[in-house]
Length: 276
Ligand SMILES: C[S@@+](CC[C@H](N)C(=O)[O-])C[C@H]1O[C@@H](n2cnc3c(N)ncnc32)[C@H](O)[C@@H]1O
Image (cartoon, rainbow, N blue to C red; front, side, top):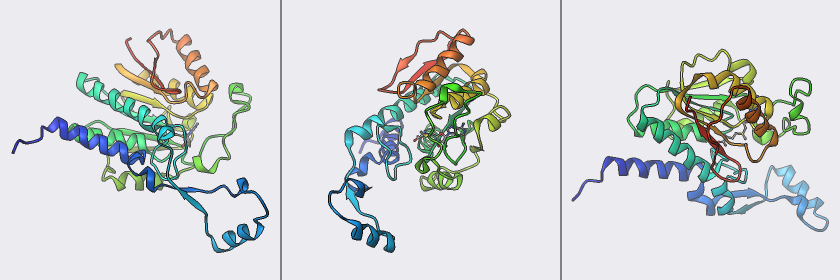
């Protein structure tokens, strides 16, 4: 019998992890709430029966194309970024480990934690013993737009979307589900404006921004970009989808004379690699 080479085993583990974190492996089983508002006719009785008994109507099966593109909000998956942007995280982490780019990893805006779980899993599989994974979020959803300080966010209020508020305990439980919760996973709980400037991070190899808003993107860039090693990556999840996020990147890059090439990942995500 020939032994499977360690690199191939490692790749198979990461493939499996990605399939679980996106739930692509279990799309057929996925339960989606049925929107009764779309049903025709008088269904008031059905509605009250469901409500009174705490029942829900669900349909089975997720959309494979949307999931690959990270273009839906999955009911149970630990990430909404989809396979293409997760694969980009994998390539960036692989590259900085292969090239010996110093520093930790952070995602600002983790939701259920899937991206950071993938990174922690890769560190385990690559045999890395000292880099940290920083998990930064309010764990209560997006802030309301601050019209005075960040007029770019006006008209983009997502602060009352309950699906976006996932508690830190839930995210810890998600790490633990994969056997990846330990003291190399560090939580920064609170609004970025309060947590990031004082975060005890020395250096970063990958800085992944997924806070959607101008304020959230700018706060993360201001506090963390100076800590990014040359050769490290900035990944911006919402660059294509959210004009305020793109504007924050454009403003920050212009202010600091950053001209590194912006590489498109998919319909919304981009990254650039720091060269200076
Ligand atoms: C779109 S979700 C992130 C998706 C996630 N990266 C994934 O893999 O599915 C945006 C997250 O950013 C967080 N967030 C946005 N702005 C924030 C801010 N200014 N401070 C703290 N958390 C923020 C929200 O709580 C939410 O969890």
